[in-house]
Length: 197
Image (cartoon, rainbow, N blue to C red; front, side, top):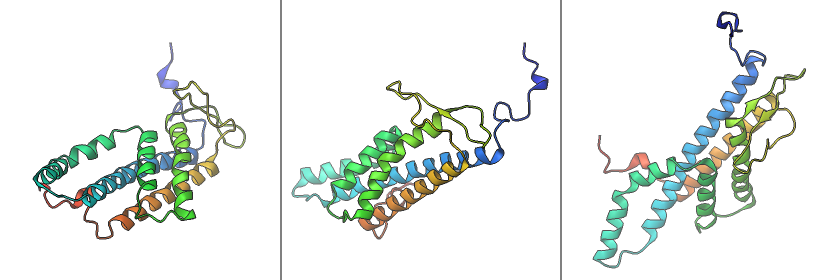
């Protein structure tokens, strides 16, 4: 039997320095902010695409009104997508939108979204090995393809800070694209005029 009274405070995380867990927590929280920003970005893409289509007759108008009435359920559906699918959907919408100038900065940023998926899954779902002398720890993660750990080198706070900063930059990119599409904020999910108070 394990004597629970003798377990170290903070077990099983007590072997790592507190700043390791702080930076990991901040990074994971930033991924959550990115997911929220992507969902809102997809929503704006979908509203803008639908608004651009011509309404030529009563059937078109009814189709648009039916679609518009289902916007909240579409928003909820996107919120439940796995992160990789959410990024893929956003990336496809951005690449196929003519309003976005695909300059090198935006293209590189969109490619960065694809790259961040593997780090997000790894850092959010990994089991952590004991820290080495430098305070770094190996993240052990098995994905759906039974592929062990994306990174074979131990992770430290510097790496976590870099990933958190990069993820924050991606949030800014998604927000900038949303502003390009909808500069007045009319298509934001929280700005709808028909919402109930």
